[in-house]
Structure formats: structure tokens, C-alpha cells
Image (tube, rainbow, N blue to C red; front, side, top):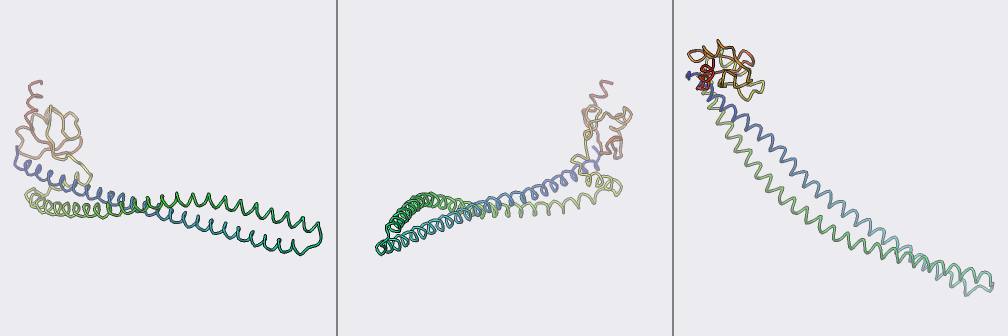
Amino acid sequence: MLEIIETLLVLQDRDRTIVQGRAEIDGLEIERVSVNERSASAEAAQASAEQAGKELEVKKNALEVDAAGEQTKIITYSKQQLETKDNTQYRAFVKQIEDCKKNISNFETDELMVLEEMDAQTETLKQTRADLDAANHDKATALSEIDERETNLQKQIGETEILRAETAAQIDEDTLARYDRLLKKGRANIVVDVEHGACGGCHMKLPTSDVANLKSSQEVNYCPNCSCIIYYTRDMNLESAGA
């Protein structure tokens, strides 16, 4: 194998490490969003539970006020009932007092239902608080781990970039320029072997003459189909044997 091919393979390996590291860092940001979303969701659930509890409290108080209002009416009607000498008015006051008592009974029934809802809401609030505490605890731990992983990846990338520059300096400008153009296109495989007469990058069959010349070539060779840098492997002998 040509020395420059060996150098290009080292370069490619270091570029893969860098690309993979950057991809992992991008993935860490997605993890951060997910962790924060869980915490935000738990916080929203608790706020919703607290608001529901407040609304039930307001509803209960309103029913108590309404019941007290009806009781005040009863006192007023009872006093007026004692003072009137008109039978028709007397019976009207009796009817009004009965209506007030029915209203009070309905308000008390509604209040009991609200109290039951408040008990259930209290349990819901306890659960949402527990969920929020757990989410915030997990959030702090998860974000700390993510930050540590990111720091390690950035360190690894930085160290690999230095090694990458040292390796790239050993390659001639023309070859390096062609390699870098393919790298910028997002190619995962740039320096590839030839297996059974096919390019290891695009897997297209190579011209017989190219395959025959590749073994003894002292220059960098490129796939005519995908422009990958190709080099000789023992599998090429199988292609020759079958020819």
C-alpha cells in the first residue's frame, strides 16, 4: 500500500472521529431539550393543579355566601311574617321561606360535592409536586452528565483536530484539496478499497484497465464514478483470477 494512502486512511479515521463527535454534541442538545421539556411539563401540571384547587376554593366560598344570603332572607321573611296581618301575605312569606330553605339545601349539596372534588384535587396536587421534585432532581443530574459528556467530546475533538492538521500536512495540496472537497459534501467514505473490481465507495464496477493498473500504480487513483480515492486490496486478485 502506498504511504500516502496509509496517511489518507489515518486522516479519514480522524475526520470520522471529529464528525462523529460533533454529531454527538448535536445529540446532546436534543437531550437537553428533552430534559427541560419534562421539567417544564411537570411544572405546568403543578400550576394547573394549583389553579384548579384555587377555583374549587372560590366555588365553595361562593356557595357558602349564597347559602348565607338565603339564611338572611329567611330571617327577614320570618320577621315580616310575624308582623303581617294579611293571610295572603302570610302565605307568600311561608312560600318564600320554603324556597329559601330548598335553595340552602341545594347549595349545601353542591358544597359537599365541591369538598369531595377538593379532597381529590389535594391528592392530585401532592402527586404533581412529587413529579415536579423528581423531574427537577433528574434534570439537575441529567444536565450535569450532559455537560460533562459535552466537555469530554469537545476535548476529544480538539485533540483530534490537532492530530488531523499534523496528518494533513503530510499530504500534497492537490490530493488534500480533492479529499477535502469530498469531505465537505458529507462523504463518510472517501478513501476506499476496491473489492472484486468494484469501488468501495459507490460499489460501481471499475474499468478492467483501471483495476489492472491499480496494483502497481505509484500514484493516487480516483474512482471515475464517485471520485473517491481508491486503493489496491487482495480481493482484487480474485477479480483478476476470474478474468
